[in-house]
Length: 109
Image (tube, rainbow, N blue to C red):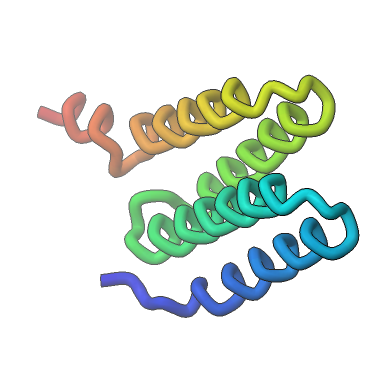
């Protein structure tokens, strides 16, 4: 069972993003969406870094790529659903192709 150390920093960052979106930008729905994404990325990093499913480099690259894809889809193209689906695909491919992922264990049989 992984530790819960990632939760404090993730909740603080998500709360700061939501507060900024609510007070400064005055778009609470965007804040809820962005805070949810931050929480998902924090959970992903916390779960897979400590569980050993990913190396720290693979997890960091996956999280960075997910942040870039979501930022691009949210602010440049304004296609939020496409960004979420692409990010999900990036995470699934990173998990499938990891050294301890299903494809690696399937290949070893």
